[in-house]
Image (cartoon, rainbow, N blue to C red; front, side, top):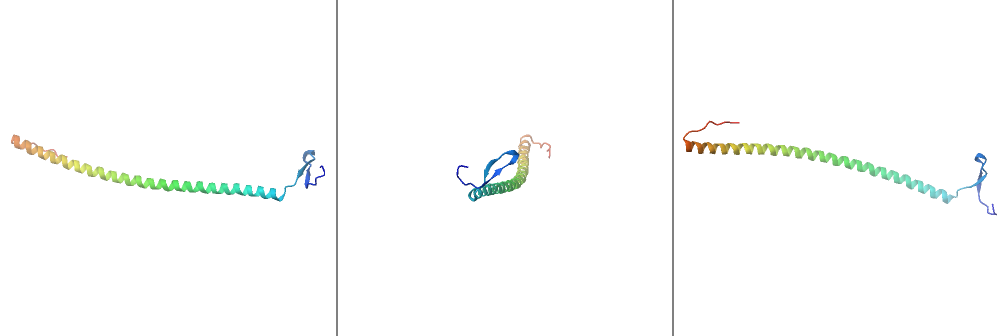
Length: 113
């Protein structure tokens, strides 16, 4: 080289005699820090993905619980409304029977359901 003393080795692979300089400690440390940062980023990202999957699983379980609770409450409300409607229709039917009995003097046959 042109008077500069550079530590290195010759690359004699496949007949090539290019000069390959040795890496300095600063370069090795820089590469090591970069590799460690990448590995740390991958690990953190994977743990966050795992956390997100567990959160989604928790939300899914809670939604299933809410769905079952809502279904049960809806069934109970529908049953209560059916009973109330049945009672009201019976009350209306009884009133109509009374009106017809008063107006016509006879009581029509009732059809219980």
